[in-house]
Image 1 (spheres, rainbow, N blue to C red):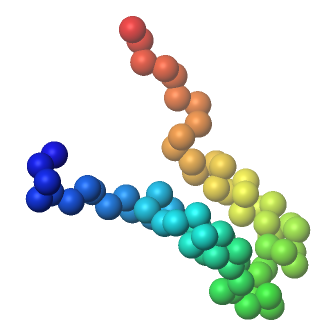
Image 2 (tube, rainbow, N blue to C red):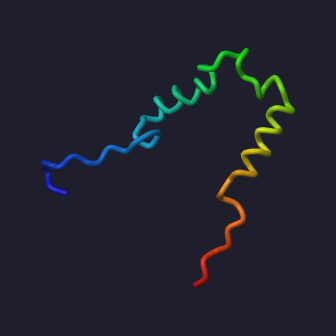
Length: 67
């Protein structure tokens, strides 16, 4: 790298200072109104959504590539 080139900026959490990461992480799900957090209120709804997501996932059950 020459002296006039800038280092690449890291995206997302990788480019943040530890203080900024803590600040963002501390907010958690606070942007959602507690009354609208359906899964925290209805266990059956959360269970059904989890099963649906697991059933439609394309990541599981793959066989490793042959050497």
